[in-house]
Length: 157
Image (cartoon, rainbow, N blue to C red):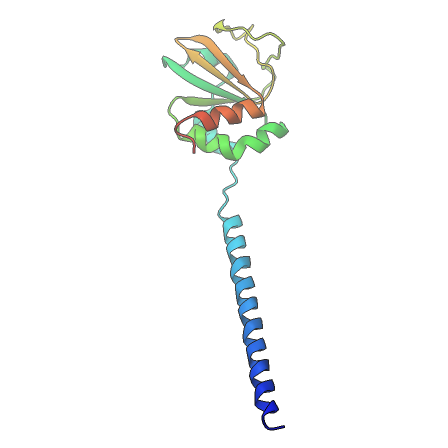
C-alpha cells in the first residue's frame, strides 16, 4: 500500500501540471488571436478628405497621369475593398477619389478620350479611371478588377 500511494500522488501531480500547461497554452493562443484581431485597422473613407475631387474636376487635375477611384459609401463592394484601397490611395501621389453624388452618370458603354463632365460616365462602383494628359485612357470596374489592380501594383503588398 505504501508503494502505491507515492505512485498515485506522483501521477496526480503529473496530471495537474499537464492541465496547467494546456490551460496556459490555450491562454497564450487566445491572447495571440485577440491581439492579431486588434491589430487590424479598419479604415473609413473620411480619411481620404485631402484626396477628394469633384465629378466635374476629374479630368482637369494638373498632372500628366493620375487615377481616380469612384466609390459609394452605400456600395457593399466598396465597403469590402476599403481596407485595401484606402491605404493604397494614401500611399500614392497619383491617386485621387470621388465619392458618389447626384452628378455621377452611369452607362453601359464606356468612352475613352476627352473628358467631358456632361457626358463622362462609369459602369458603377467601385471604378478606377486612369487619365493621361487630360484624356480618359482606362476604366477598371468592379470589386474583383479593382482588387486585382491593387495586387498587381508594385507598391501594394
